[in-house]
Length: 155
Image (cartoon, rainbow, N blue to C red; front, side, top):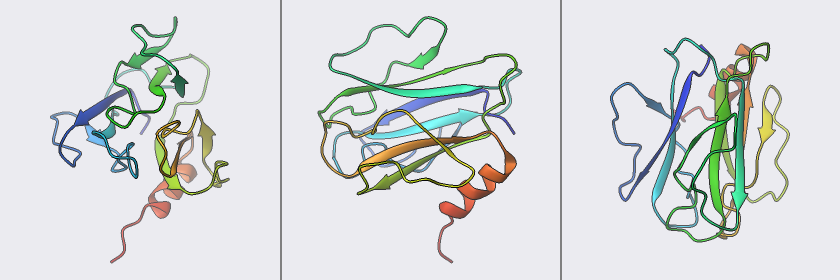
């Protein structure tokens, strides 16, 4: 199912915390740098699929979205220092819908190539130290299966 809405949850408690109507990716986007616990949430029950997503780093706080894009005004480096990082998305007709996001925490300074997934945006820990966090998306069911395999919990 395609993603139809996104949000960011920022909290002082490890989570993600339950929020009615939302599912959350389990990767803390402040992993390895401290600060607030930050999780990306999504919905799949809307009428229009998200077709583009991006993560952009700034040297100062932003007060408005980029024209033509939706955003979360939550800084993805909240409480950890470093750059101000924001998540943006839009709904371009004619583009393939995004089926899933994935966030990879690694010591690799270049985003690893992952079959079925497309890297997008900056290091989500940019300027805060710690390991690199790279964002990816998939527009195919194969990519969704790859995400599930990549993050499968040991039994």
